[in-house]
Image 1 (tube, rainbow, N blue to C red):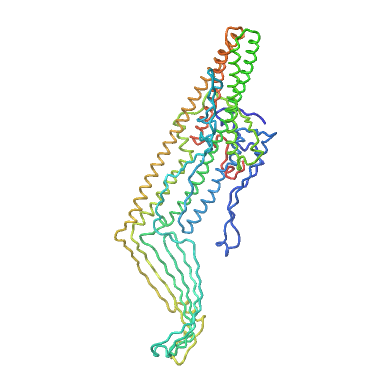
Image 2: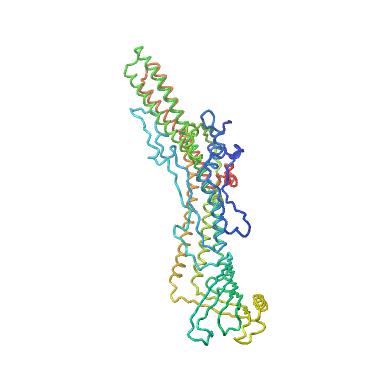
Length: 633
């Protein structure tokens, strides 16, 4: 594999983008499959969500050779996007937001979306590392002992909630119309026997009859708040009464009832607010996914940089141990010749032991960092024995460019305001609060509904001569009834107003004020987030400037320590110095070399932090949002 230079601006290593390698990677995307049972059974069928996949992408095993995982930063970012479970978790947020929109279009209340963003763990090479800047060897007896990674909180995965609304829900406001049309139907048969106290009514002491009811209805609500109810009722009755003109007979009516709110619940702005909020939530979901990508890519870049740093630091300590062995051998030769006192051999041997301890610590921290990075790049962590046993060999190196191409801070801030997805989604949340407040304010109004009814009735049956002379137009069966309804022979019309006036209205008043307060709070939180963005950009610039200065100072110090050690070694070879002073200068050099390595890593992470703070980290590293969403880099 071609070895790339990680120019510590880190974006240079990914200029070609993660898609430059592993094009054959095939990963299933999260999807919701809609069944096709036809229009009749469609509303009653369950939509199938694609099952979870815990199989690593083929890219991971393609990079394994001879038990080692040869990993560039480009490959590390691509593996994270394909396999990281935080990203996989957020892929399910897309169909989740679709259900919100679907629910709102049916007239349902929203259930909300998840605003939690997870970040990769800090790792053992982070700020709490006990080893990365420690002296490789000590001029005085003793050496460093690394702490447990769990105790350093290096394994934990930090989480942040980007919701500016807080955990308190907004009020639901006035009731919404049910946009999904509903068809109702019922049929029943009843035999009824009723003792009569007066034969004058029915002409028989016990009125008995068979009754059949067959009814159907249609109900639907609209964005204006209008509620439409169409009912078609049919009754077939046969009694032993002697006074009915028809026996048996059929009665039917077709009734249309329309209710229109005039104050509370009036207008599309109120009744379709949840649809607009759900559409905003879909946009927010896309922005949150982009934010999760940013955090994951940044975290992996940081973990990879620390892995490179720890690898180089382990080499420093390996070289220090080799020097300690060489010093011990030279000292032993001098002692055997009688030119040095035996105490010098004891000092040299102690230096070997100290250097061995430092190397053990360094390698242990490096192994922990490898395990943490593997967990961020795979779906099954280290459960795969092949992955668990693999040793990561980073193929990129650290280097500090001669100049920084950052631009003025005003330009960087403008870029952050324009590109940061967390800022954009916060603005949409504030807009959702404003939309919800419309419902709360509307709920303060009295309930005044205009109700209109139009009904056509029909009656037909078999004449019963003993009861009298029937109307010829009503003699017949069900067809006669339908004809009467269709020709509107027996119409009924009506219009009215329903008024409900709450005399105190304290619940609605409290909700309206509370939602207005929460809107103001969300605006404050959005401002806080904007200020935080400013601070992150400025802090990253300061960190770059400081780490560059530290690196230049560390390079100068390392060169001077190399010269000092050469001088002391020359004096030692001529018998003008002792192993104590050689060990001391070697300790200074080892410290300088470790500090130089740490400074290069600090600069790399500061540059990555600036890319994250300005929101350009995905574009700078060639990460495509559609490819990341599908899991196919």
